[in-house]
Image 1: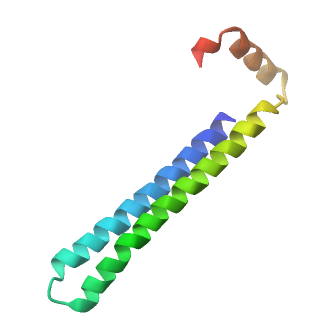
Image 2: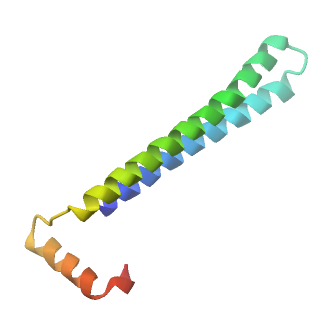
Length: 96
């Protein structure tokens, strides 16, 4: 389950990185091509699209996080080693 949680966080960070790159690209287009209305328009379009990517990434992250937490409660270990680790975590919960 930990790998699934980390994968979800990694995906969220990829969305945030993409969103930030789009917003910065939009600002760069606006600043570098101050006299060309086409590129200014492209820059203006990139900014809200980047913000939408960030909002969508957060929405997916939060939804998947809820799903994972619901399935974590129903998780049953598939091997003896995993079962022992789960039991140790129940005995010493402060080590997580």
